[in-house]
Length: 185
Image (cartoon, rainbow, N blue to C red; front, side, top):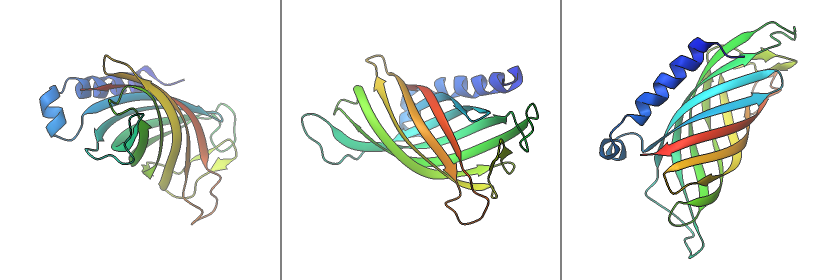
């Protein structure tokens, strides 16, 4: 389980993102913020992020449109089988940036589907439960779905994969099931 220190720091970052005045956030770097929790094979994650939605859309119709957003994130991973030894822990900090394409209604409410592939930088090489990553630089891709409520809150889930694309071995990858709560300013 994550330490209260990590959760506390993540909550403070998220609170700071939510405290941005709406007008300033829309003109500046972010117009929404999120907190995510993920789990994989003997590993857990907490992530905070800020998003900037694109002012552009494609394939618009009366039923929906394709658009997207930039997602800048900071995560903490906790492996529970470091070097394949049960009970040995590994903590890794991860920063990332991902362009995400999203299909949703024109008013940005209701159900959506999304997919993205971005880049991430790990503070340490991942070595947990027979899964090893040989580089600090990783690609992070995901597919997900969710629902945007009338009150600007969003809930979602996604499947995410980290790997270096096979340019250096070992590269067994890390897979996650992630749940998300976000708020649009």
